[in-house]
Image 1 (tube, rainbow over the protein chains, first blue to last red):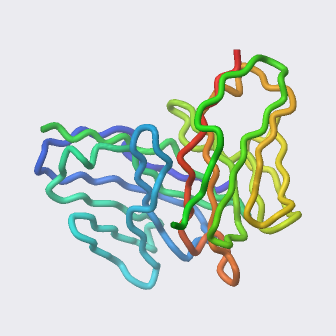
Image 2 (image 1 turned 30 degrees about the horizontal axis):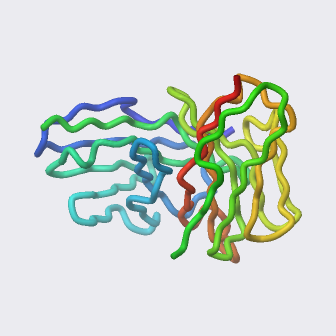
Image 3 (image 1 turned 90 degrees about the vertical axis):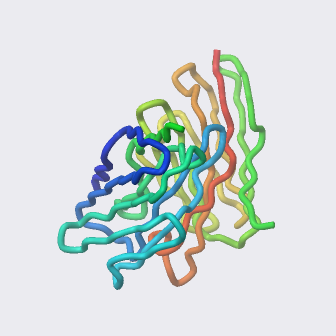
Length: 110
Length: 117
């Protein structure tokens, strides 16, 4: 079964700092590498995604980087804000299953 | 507004009393899925459906049933709930015609918090 290895499991960052979350995969059927953001009491929602034909995509303070040879992609949050405090997930695939790891709980200290 | 709607949002029940959690999407998505979320375990897939009348097991299907008689609806059925099914449940859907669920984002509902006593 496809493993999704997300790191770290939890992260505390000072306001204004850079948050970095990594996702490593084995083989994948994905042609699309997303990060999902989940606030307490809410369902996960797409934050940002990248296609493998590019190595980096930036949307505002959020940047996703893709390293195909290393089989990993990462999320960088610049100028982290308290409102970014949430759990972040990256998905993996196994046959037709879309699976998730345990997520990264990000806390931004004011 | 494009959305995935789950009902109810909260449900408290007793062991053995059959229940159904409904899920409906208005985006004409072919792929639908159920997940449960437990502390420290992330999102675990229960069942998924690639299209009408096509369903398959995820990683934790025991104790659950689903059906996909219409494209928009994908109810989750617990025939005889047990306390270990106390969890937060999410329904999700994805556009898949010609693309597959790996090529487009999952849209999640707002969850159903189930407590089985």
